[in-house]
Picture 1 (cartoon, rainbow, N blue to C red):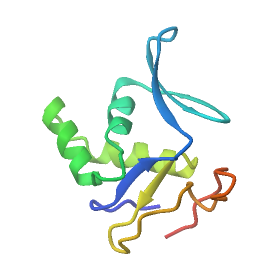
Picture 2 (cartoon, rainbow, N blue to C red; picture 1 turned 45 degrees about the vertical axis):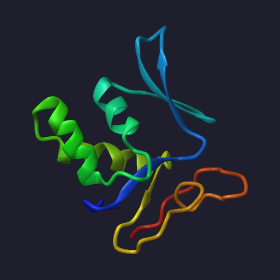
Picture 3 (cartoon, rainbow, N blue to C red; picture 1 turned 135 degrees about the vertical axis):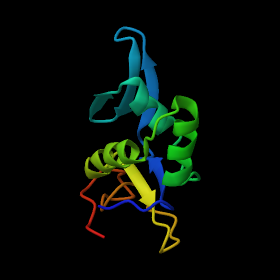
Picture 4 (cartoon, one colour; picture 1 turned 90 degrees about the vertical axis):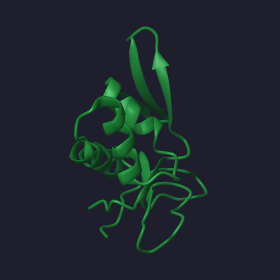
Length: 117
C-alpha cells in the first residue's frame, strides 16, 4: 500500500504500546504476539491516533529529532499495515477506516490481509 501525506494511521483496536521493563524498550502488544520496537518505532506509533496525518506525524518527529524522517515513517507504517497492526483512514476517500485492520472480521477483531488500494 502506498501511504499518502494526508492518510491518518491508527493502531488496530486490539493492539497497544507498552514499555517492557525486562527488555528496557517499547513493545507493540497484540493478541497473537508482540513486536519489539526501538525508540523511533515507539515514537511513531505513539502519534498514530487516527487523527494526525502522516505529514503531521513526520513533522512532529522532525521537530523533535532535527532530521528528515518522512520516508522512515512511511516505511515503518507500511510494514505494520501489511501485518494488520495499523489501519489507515485514507485521505482521498475521507473514510473513517474499519473497526479492525485490513479485511479482518469486525465481529471477531481478527486481523486479515489488507486489500491493495
